[in-house]
Length: 330
Image 1 (cartoon, helix red, strand yellow):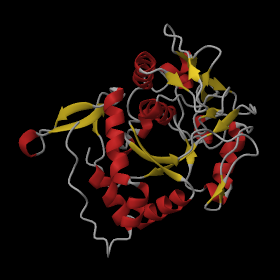
Image 2 (spheres, rainbow, N blue to C red):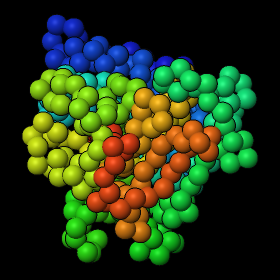
Image 3 (cartoon, rainbow, N blue to C red):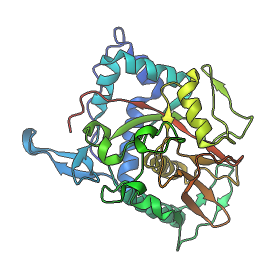
């Protein structure tokens, strides 16, 4: 890992960003994320010939074969400092419990991220063992540590038939066409290179609350289990307390799962323990919404799809708040 970038030049007395930065422990979280991505095997070193001394920079290779440098800490600070609207959104969401920061390598192929997560599960099991949030020691099927619905594996590949490609940012699950649903393919989103990396914040909670157990923070009630993807989607769009939130993508879910493994050897969304399965609301593949959870019976992590109208007490929803970085130099 490289040395940390120089500390911010924010002035305590003058800059309204400082309180938020300190509350979120932003610098510490940023470098923890670089460590997570490095240990997961996501980051590569690229030589930027356009910069002085042809320095090495860390980044990823996207589905389009292009190199995307990870946003710098200074770029994140500059956005919070110079974009009052974005800062106010993050301040509000921090009050509501969205305090865990993640760097999401969105441009990376899903197939690669799934393989890296599989390797991390095996490594963690071998070196320290796996556990659930309730403290249960978990077994792992070392021959098949993850189950992956085959429609997910190449769902972000531009060569995949369009009716099998992942749609991101879906607003209406009842509409019949992609245009009416409002979703976009990853290849379309990457036409804007600022979408290659996502800086997001999620609630600092171990498990998705069961029905009737959601807490209220900052005037917002946590999402609870036992709603369908359609119902969660409508709440995101229509209920003011969930303004500026969106569903996790599969890419974001995999980074969360990996981070929890690296932090505490803990599996995520163990629905037979204290957790619930996670619906990735806003995404759609082959007519289904991606879902994920840990299945104790099979001793492995599951990634598959369910009908948007499906409802179950064992299934819930994680949302996130995204910081839209200004002027990323990619």
